Image (cartoon, rainbow, N blue to C red; front, side, top):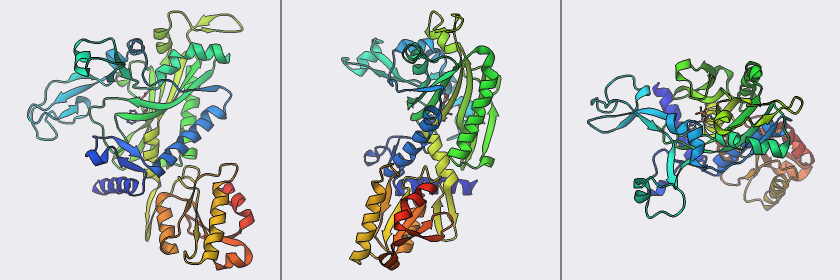
Length: 439
Ligand code: GAP
């Protein structure tokens, strides 16, 4: 267990040191559990989101996208049931006043000081704010101002609220899905474990609209899609992925069946993604009349919904944990090439030989400016070549291209593979094709 805690510390420290994830607002002493994605983190995160969008939106005929406002009319949350039921049991220690989630405690005593705990109170997780000018936030809160709004706790509701708009503007017929990637906010009682549980996070969600009688088959096919994503696209270790059938009495208020996909993080097995059968709960609550008309029969009805949902930040974390590898003389981040922040790095063997530097610079620029957007490429001419390899290994760059003296004679470069450390000589003219094929 201690090894695992140490492993997690090493991943967090690498993430900060190499510019993947920084503590939020750090120069002001931070803000509890807020994190900023640095230059490499934003590339990794965008690569995950782009791979997802390409797979689940662009490469399918039955999907359309959406990018809705983060703040919606508060009546949305009344209709969706979030105002009434989106809460966790909160307990407080009578001695040290630390607060905990009642359903996550093993003992009835305070884990921090063994003090006595209060009875659990339901604490609504929605993050509140006030829209437009108010005399003061205190005044607005005291007067139960009509300006009171919530940051969305899930991206899903916009897909229901815009369902009719999407139907009217795209002439879709069920089965079809609406996909969205965006931020969600929850006033979590116990955030933690780095970017695993935060109060501001990002989701990739699909609401897939179907006929009620088809739900079991569609649920099953999304279950397979989600497995394929975790294994083929994120490259996660199959043995670390588990399914949890959520017991009936723990289902969210809208769900008739939910499977959680769990991953063995260094801090333990925990939820990565979810798959839920939301029935017609949401559309029924938002629309007074059935919003869908079957074009063949003219029958109107409320479609049912299967909802596969993916956390972006948890995807980043799983990919980092899965890829982090310590070998005898190096630390390697074995990221799938497609997700790696840099696709390749280019070095001149020696920084003080202008011929080598110039040649390497040309190759670097050519790779960077390939018309099909090969992806970001790193440049490094510091220190010795061994150190540069180690530095790229640690951030997951799949290939290092070195220009050496032989390059000046025969127009070939060495390409070193991150995982095997083997080197191959490749003609410069064929370099882009060579790398593209592997990436
Ligand atoms: N629309 C359904 C829904 O929101 P959820 O299981 O509450 O379902 C979906 O959330 C996913 O969002 C989770 O599986 C997880 O990946 C991510 N997620 C939820 N709460 C989170 C938090 N506080 N921090 C980071 N990610 C979170």
